[in-house]
Amino acid sequence: MPTYARADLVIERGEGMYLYTSDNRRLIDFAAGVAVVSLGHCHPTLVAALQRQAATLWHCSNLYRIPGQERLAARLVEASFADSVFFSNSGLEAMEAGLKLVRRYHDETGHPERWRVVVCSDAFHGRSLATIAAGGQPKHLKGFDPVVPGFDRVAYGNLNETRVAIGPETAAILVEPIQGEGGLRVPPPGYLGALRAIADEFGLLLFLDEVQTGMGRTGKLFAHEWDGVRPDIVAVAKGLGGGFPVGATLAVERVAKVMTAGSHGSTFGGNPLAMAAANATLDVMLADGFFERVRTLGTSLKREIEALGRRHPRVVAEVRGLGLMLGFKTTLENSSVAQALQDAGLLTVLAGDNVVRLVPPLIVEESHVREAMAIMDRVFAALVEKPVPAKAGSGSA
Image (cartoon, rainbow, N blue to C red; front, side, top):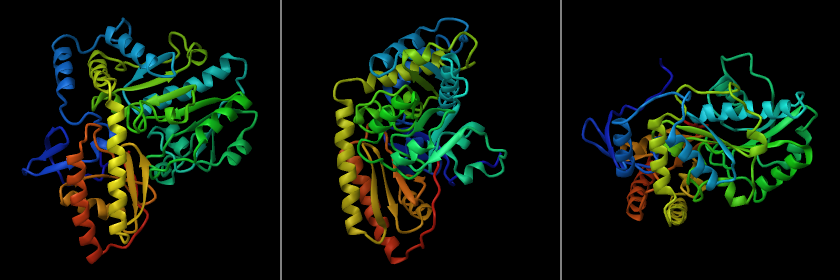
């Protein structure tokens, strides 16, 4: 179906930080499949793990125990706030499981009237009917009326609006620690901690969408760790499988225990192939020094983009983000800037608010940063000579 505005590129293979096209072009990848290819292309640890599993068992159904699934759940629990994990195939499914968990929790604890969720403007939570309603962006809702009810919208980062939106039917607060699709928006300091306090005050659940911010993207396993908060539910996906489709919904015990046999499920979720990929990804990510290195490279990349912004103020208006989830708001048309970068050999991703995202694999090195910045420098200089007028950009998650 014609649901994608695809670039005219045929990608044939990938290796590390690079993609190679059918016409023998080499592209340095600062898009990473929209922040998915967390360990780069064809990482040897992931390749070996999938090859071993592919020769052993692909699928057996959640009717039976799956050792790789039990191992991955235990490792995620040990490394996080959570006590329990549900596995699915995508971030969307992880979000849907979390939304069901919110309603089920309040129903089982004597408050079935609590079902509404406070959400934020410019959010992105997926493409199902429920999650486009949670995101609330007109471009995603167009043509899909009636909008699924149950979501009350407030400005991102605005605690006063959040408190006002809470009523007797409110069940949870849902927020991204950093808005990705919405334009790499980082909230004010202490925002998540304040949301935790509000949730506790009103008996609500704090539900975090870490589909993009999780799995090391900001320099910690989860972005909420920067604020030192303990959420009730977190949805993750993207980087968890290093490119293999896998999602997970993590929850604390008091919430997770309301789910019983038959209350939720997934045919393919947590299958042996996905678990092999995700466990191999964790093998790399949980090694000593991995997240520290992401923080170091993220600081270096942000510093370099800011320096480019000072050299090219007619192109770069603002630099945003944290860790290796970075981007710049441009004074030109973001899609035209991204196209010019692609033509010069650098892949990026669009976001809202006229932002161009740079979300490279977490294995990026200083040499790759220098290569990307050199391309950006040349392209920005050329754009200034023949600028493209700015207009509202669009994202791609």
